[in-house]
Amino acid sequence: MNKLNSPETALDAFLISQGLARPEERARWHALAGGVSSDIWRVDLPGRSLCVKRALAKLKVSADWQAPVSRNAYEWSWMQFAARHCPDNVPRPLAHDAEAGLFAMSFLAPEEHPVWKQQLFDGEVSASTACAVGQVLGTLHAASAYSAELAAAFDTTDNFRALRLEPYFMATADRHPALAARLIALTERTAGLHIALVHGDVSPKNILVGPHGPVLLDAECAWYGDPAFDLAFCLNHLLLKCLVRPDRRDALLGAFASLTDAYFDQARWEPRRDLEERAARLLPALLLARVDGKSPVEYLNDGAQRDLVRAVAGPLLLRPVTRLSLVAEAWSRAVVR
Image 1 (tube, rainbow, N blue to C red):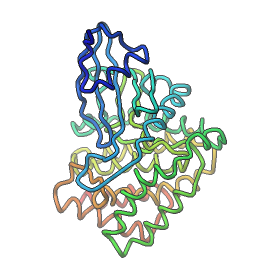
Image 2: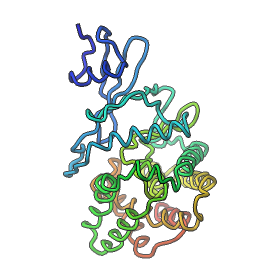
Image 3: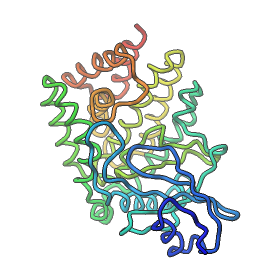
Image 4: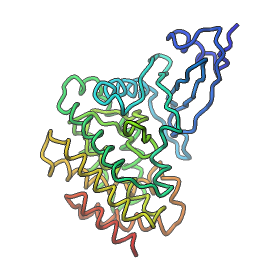
């Protein structure tokens, strides 16, 4: 008798076919809260637990946002790459079924791996955590820079357009005609760069603070492209958290600087001025996208907060700066008012 008791028989079959469970074993499936783009379960089996993830064709947002489920296979491949170079900083990949769009990975107990986003919301802002995130991100980018093999394996510009460039920059351009030309140009410039393996969703909600350093999750947007996107994407969240925890503004800006410095300690594949200039141009676009794009952050519900983001991001898009510290300074001046 099959005792796996999953939400769907196809999920039972996946575990059994991959040798992760036996038909006679009793298992408990628990849906996990997470992002908008996948179903994720914790599966408890006798003496062990694991996670199973499946990509969704329609994302769980109010806007109509479709994305190819093939991204599940690219996330699996990104995890395998990351596990080779930073094994402590990614869940252990266990099994993958490309046809079913499923993979299994190790389960990381939340009591030992708190989510960085929740720590930041709680006012627990650690410069050492930010530094470690920057080091891991820079290490992974450095390990992949200018690799023809990885460029071919992650030729996913169409996915990246569907998951990032269109819903973030192009959707925001529709809302801001005066900024549209800048956002469109930024979209095309970013899409045309193929320098290193990009995670695509380096957000505090996708980073666990583990006993051996940060653990990166949810690489569904993996793409061989512009590493500046990952750096700007993560730094963006540290700025936005200042609006939720204004009492921790200085600490968050300090974390911003720590992450930036640690990242560039590893970023030796191209001149810093070039990489930083691209990140400094992407950052205000990402700020604005998290207010007026297809995936606004859920914690900025106050109109004044959203207006502040627009007031900072708009001028920086029209008159770009070349250093990330200058973006942070403009943000700090606005937030302190």
